[in-house]
Length: 340
Image (tube, rainbow, N blue to C red; front, top):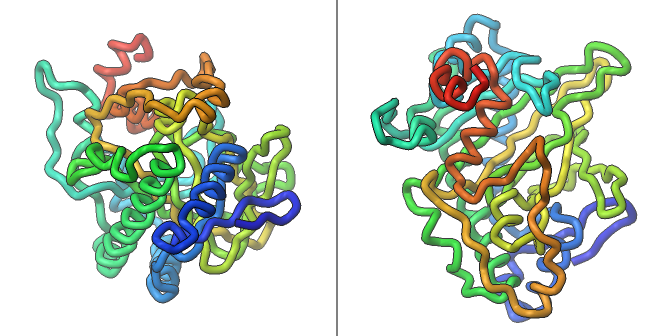
């Protein structure tokens, strides 16, 4: 592991299976505990696939608006599909980006008496008829992102004194993984900086493929913002809220945001979120005493309470960030929560 001034640690995940495994686990534990964000190299995802993913993203967002709106997320009770600029919200403010949300391809369950509401998040994706290449490239990239993310999670389990398969049970074929294909247009005004407002991710881990533009910022231990400068061949990883709960705050989900690109500049990124089964309930793991002594407890934020039940946590996040979809498809849940 090495660091540069005011940047993030760099972790070569291939060392997890190498001769210096013990030193590697120390490096990973330090990066995850001290910052919560780090670059991952040595992941084995081909440069060709990463380039194809960015290319097909740019092709989609260059389609005429009617072709993009064919898969608008207002047509999906599962919050899948295309989101127009300014219609997703972070902490109540609109984000200056457009995107496609994609999850596992499954049959929709829909509402049913006695069934938890969060299971209605299960369902199909929306794919644009004008770009048939999108689906195969995205699903191939998604499989690779899942492979790398699970390897990093296994390494984290080992770094925390657990068997490396400790978390595997929640990541079967029903795991609630998801990804976004995101376009950040040039900012509409010089002072309009919010590409995405400051937030935390509510799964276990997030993986990010960036283009060369940059704009992601991470809140450092001292409260200052660190630029996550694009690093060739590296993914950016960060700790999610479920790992904060599981470690009782030894690992912290870190605030991060995206600053809108300048006039005349477009940014593209693909974040992948490693979520478990929707019925997963996070239980604190037994940390070694020397690590447990450094666990500061789960963050208490009245505006963003962390829930041990992953499905409830995920549903709360979707309802909060996509109010138009929530009003159309989830009015009964909003009403039951006193938000209708």
